[in-house]
Figure 1 (cartoon, rainbow, N blue to C red):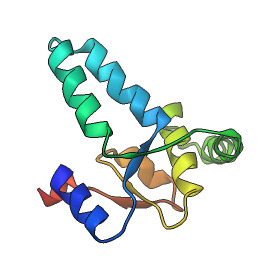
Figure 2: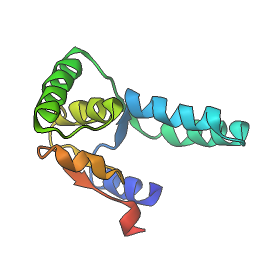
Figure 3: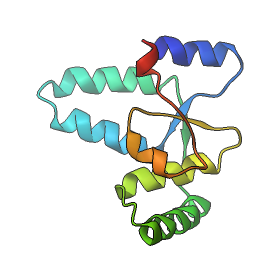
Figure 4: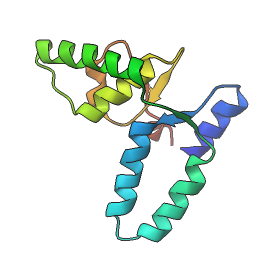
Amino acid sequence: MHRLADAEVRKGNRVGICTIVMGELWDGVEYSESRERNAALTKTRVKKLMMWLYDTPSAIDFGRIAADLRRRGQLIQQPDIQIAANALLLPNCTLVTTDSDFRVISALQLENWVAHE
């Protein structure tokens, strides 16, 4: 997956994660049995990435998306809605994920890099 991210950067595209995803990564590190090894690996890998903050416009978009999904009876986890809100505010953003829950948010551009490996 890092090879694909590097290729996108060489094309002039920005590659990064939002603070919500950073929290999910560190949750995985803290819960793992190889905490020290995974912490070092995570620190090394995220240094290369841009960091998009979850801010007030993201929170407002979160509210809009969450309410729309509830009205349609399509519930997904709140962190996923926060990630989607962050992505939708970035121009020409493609959300790279293996999580099929994001498909219920039609405005998102999705790509699965694991499928390309």
